[in-house]
Length: 236
Image (tube, rainbow, N blue to C red; front, side, top):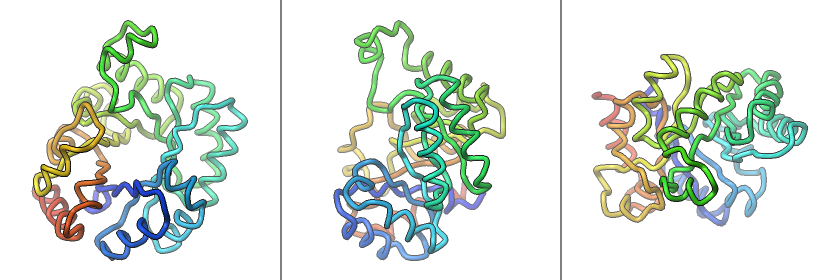
């Protein structure tokens, strides 16, 4: 896989102008972008459509958790926007994940990625909602359920990448948010992820993609940080 395509830059902004300013600064080096609920709510579908039209990979992080017909409709809408990945909650269960996969089948470029456990959660958070499993146990259980439901990959903490790669085999995509970048450790430390790891470690452990936001987008020179990250991954 092209190292540049492994790196998904998170456009976590509350307006389209700031998001597109980063895209412009990264230029051709920026090949893949994540658009989450904040930016999609603030700016609507224009930005994912524009990025897809420019040949960029678009990770539409919707975290879908609804009845099957609604999830299927949202996945089809993501496909029409040109998204290459769309997320559904694995906690939604096999029927909903299968509905998402079935809807995505009409779009050869679109992959359904199941969110396992949000990377800000720790064991105590799971206990608070009545789950006795540890984060690692719940992540593994949901990842296997996603695989059985036909999903193309999972979202999980970079610390879970090695175990998931061993459990899921070589073909499933593993997308890891919460990665840190050696070029910007101070910025990385201010993210909201409880279970982070360095980008190179995540890829070395089996992640196919990493999501990096503030260490790139809030850096004084975003293009230089992204270039450093591409170089680091290319030399693994």
